[in-house]
Length: 150
Image (cartoon, rainbow, N blue to C red; front, side):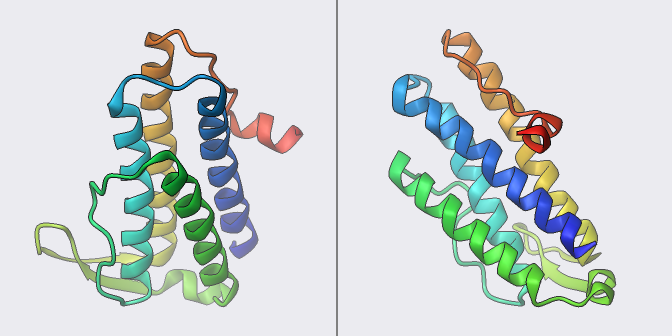
């Protein structure tokens, strides 16, 4: 399972990087695109903080400029893959206790949290593609199977 989750994080980074690469050629006008990208990355970091039992290190709606998005994408990907690397397969069943952003207590299995992080990114990239299409921007192909084949 560790290998599978690492593969999903590699895909996650690849897909987000494909969106950011499009912006080098066609700069989007809708600020919501950058807000969603920033939110995606903040959520990744917040979930990692929870998994590592660390205090929350970023705000969920932190504003990032394009270069910051690229840097955080790289750094968070690296931190997640390093975190997964140090796990044993049994660790994926570990229950992580944390407080959500409203201060409510929760307990979830690590494997479910990792799945949440990946699905959250996929969800928001879909919304970003809709906003890009509305602007007439060229859309990247982000399907997982396309990633695997490339």
